[in-house]
Length: 523
Ligand SMILES: Cc1cc2nc3c(=O)[nH]c(=O)nc-3n(C[C@H](O)[C@H](O)[C@H](O)COP(=O)(O)OP(=O)(O)OC[C@H]3O[C@@H](n4cnc5c(N)ncnc54)[C@H](O)[C@@H]3O)c2cc1C
Image (cartoon, rainbow, N blue to C red; front, side, top):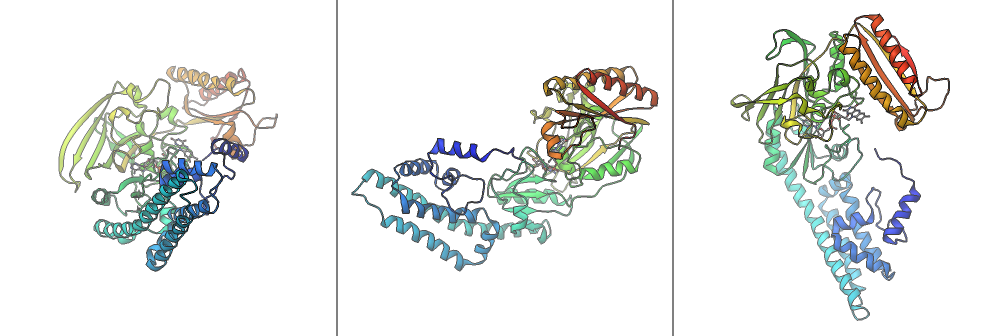
């Protein structure tokens, strides 16, 4: 989401940079793109320079308006998949529109005055040429799209049901952005496979068609990874891959005892895995705040984690194995060996077996073992290093879908200790004085755990912007909005030990101008 910026600031900035009398002159532009961005997209950067100069001379009047109308007409169609479909279905109406655009450029041509100002006229001439080329490209694009739609339906129709190949406006509009709300291009097609097995064929088909592949789960990502950047993008929506198991006891490779696991396809909503774990008396450690909307594939691709990361790490630490389709449209199975049932950076070496299969997923082509020092997965003291996309070269995880499509995964789930207290810590003073409380709590609780006492099962930080956004109601008698709130879960098998550790945490934050409120039951 974008932080709100006062309109006056935007206006002032635009006036200062472009000396523009109005913020927008291109008509029908209800998008967040400025005139400058639209001109650069349709005519190129040089055209914007020329247009700005002509406009500064304040002698462009009706001609400039007509040129902007042409750009506005093209833009409104390019940004509206419903209009595109209408024009694709109606060649006659399309022809009339293209004729009208050329006609308007013809009217500008008629108004040229080479004798009065040759230099200015040359600029107008060049702009007209660029605009005319843009109209031609616009017209040709309909043919290109129609032909590519025909080929896509044919090639991908061999792999998935016809209804799963979606060119309609609604499907394209709903896959133009994610939680960033950033919009660049509409996807050319949205694919919604019914089964995991279809995924390799879809990748192969998209590569053959020259489409850019973008895997997508719940679209809650905050990095823009699921956003199409080119017009010929295929978004593969995994939401129908929702098969999963209940808790299954398994002996994982390299382990000598059964542990609790859950297998899920990529499109399973994160919270459904947490629900299944709870039904079996266990806890799913991957708990982003977006759990009701995000999907398992997105969790692997982003290495998601939440409050429970303090205790059991993020997606990476809780994966027993995962399956993915490579860019070569083949299958890869990654299996963690000797899982430590805890945080991955606590082991000296984390080992993974990589098994590469052919396109059918049946013929094993080769195997490989990755032995990666545990500490390389994280920066000291960090739950997840978002700056590290490579993640020691381990395929799939934290790669934002760039090295393949996650199709399914098996997760380990955990037993929560018998007793838990949730502590809510509100800080009203200066945020910079409050933040060190996080380190105090972490240091105290980690030492406590080392002593064999209670464990910190979760710690969540909410800043004042978030508190404001969710309409947080303070528990303090002071009233008003705190500067920062921490929620901590403190757990253990001995109720007294848990109670003592919780009191000590509250005492620690009292020293940092914080107030603590304890709930004996988590809810
Ligand atoms: C309100 C809110 C709260 C959030 N809280 C947290 C939090 O507490 N912790 C946290 O870690 N994140 C959080 N996030 C971020 C986001 O929810 C996570 O990154 C989540 O894992 C994204 O999952 P998704 O299914 O929505 O992925 P999408 O947004 O659909 O995709 C995200 C990226 O993963 C790729 N991808 C998706 N599916 C696959 C697949 N099957 N194979 C390969 N690549 C794939 C996409 O191409 C894209 O690059 C939050 C987001 C919101 C909006």
